[in-house]
Length: 174
Image (cartoon, rainbow, N blue to C red; front, side):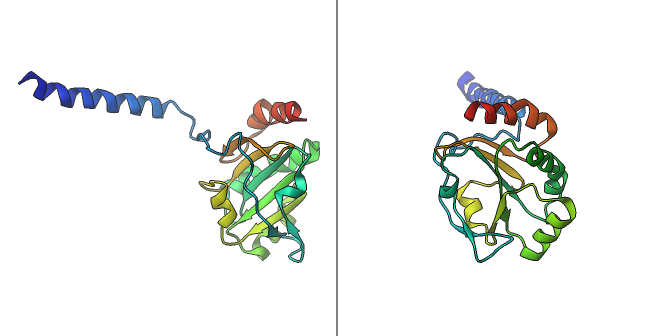
């Protein structure tokens, strides 16, 4: 008779434990299976110059930042001034991955708000984003000289995150 009440109580305690752990995690730091693994390969046309392509292979030997963004994304517009500042500081090349966007709208946003990117690859159908495990935009990756993903951030980069995590990591990887 006691076992009949003990099993639901134990299940309840286990569920409360999982909930407690989940509530104490930062939603921007979702563990990624890609951390410490080679960045997925791709080749896409460039946003600004559709006749040219971009592939992560061209960045081998450099530490660089991949920022997934879109003109329709409100959080991307919120993050954009931080990226412009990061570009001004010339910490590492910033490559944009324009995700599920319209080319004209993306170019207009960069004209209005400034262009922090060395270039942007145009991922119109979101296929490359899927390979990178993109949950939603913006997302940012730091990729080392060997082409290995060392950091992933979901959501907009803030000046605090830039100063506290990204700048020290870029300095360490150089």
